[in-house]
Image 1 (tube, one colour):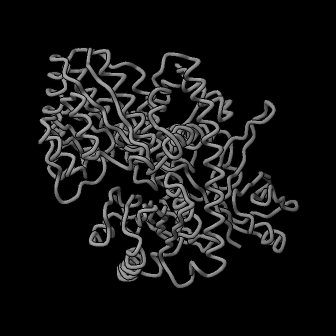
Image 2: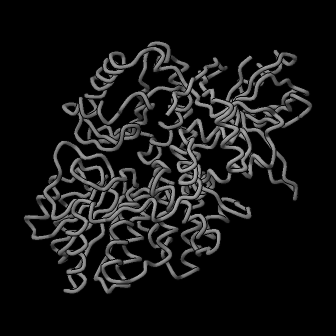
Length: 578
């Protein structure tokens, strides 16, 4: 493929970069697929330039994306053991995780194994009481209760001691997981994880629910049966919530799931929509990620995640509505706690306790911060300051239990692995991980991470960056553009909502500060006026007032605003450059 030249702009907050696509390429794509120039530019910027590449992307199909499950290591072994357990009526325990991925994976297992006649039950750990992952204690209890098979979903790849306990207790442990394996694999009956080095399955980016879905699809295929359609809703929720790349199989199944939920609305989904006030003709992936899944996640963050399984696959509408009201209240409480933690961290920044000028890692800890919410706040800190962030809940047993989020340039999983001598337990991915360590090791870990990041990254690596897809005019921001962008859906991780650079616009009226947090103004260029809004960028209000007559560049996304029966085009601002 021809190398693409990249141009950069220094913005108010971010260092912008965008590709300069050859006009003949853009023109060819635009005319071949009857799409607007900016969207053709987006496709080319994302490496899609040939007719075959673009067709495969826009019109993804099952046959194009699906691979033979016999390539998935231990899949045959796992499926045969589950079938034997069903035939012999052996007790099966599904062991999940407390997030949406784990809840939907557990619900999917129950939804699919019960109709086959399985003697199956499930258990999801309480975040505070039980902690993360399968434990030897749980395995011993399962043995005492007569379970012969334990199937982990969305966890288990680090369950070394529990695997040995299962073997000792004559329980066959089937691990299904998607998290990055450590150097060694637990000694389980079967380990199904596409990220194992010797797994030949080509697609590696499933969420836990994706791995669960693949195993159950294979199981049903061997039984000659059709999967319950409910699985597509569960697959959609878990995949989007776990922020895995929306490429390949994930993209296909999320698109399929969106088509399904927009035609068939389950009792649970109806309640989730009502709770979030979603009144739209069609639900999209970003609606699911921002409005729907946080409600389910709130259960695992602050309460008992097992209610999430009952909620998602329950047949009693009154019980579903009851749990739905609990979800709403918990999600409201989660927001308040999140705001409180952010306030604490901002105070530490203002006091100098957290030194943003001289430190590249944000680390903070408190015994007042619920462990279920600190991961969300860590993500916000990375977005706000562009620095890897580790936040910890301090226990009364001298342990610090934390969540960390990182920037793309710094692999947090490898950093933790390199300092495993300081850590009691850890797991996760390159940009998101969980860990626990002794309180006295916190300063040592901070020092080690600071040294590592200084050694591996340049000052430019640590600058906050904003990737844009294309240059567009204000006149390009129209309903045709929105319609064409819909072909690129579903949007999410690794298939982001297109972002555009609009050059040389001017303000046409005084900006408005909304709720002391958001800034709205009207901009003009080339005979066109459009509204522009920046969320959570209050500092731009003074900048716009001060430089109200100067032209500027804006980095923005374009959206349709539905209000009072009218549909208008609005720009969601990301940054400005004067």
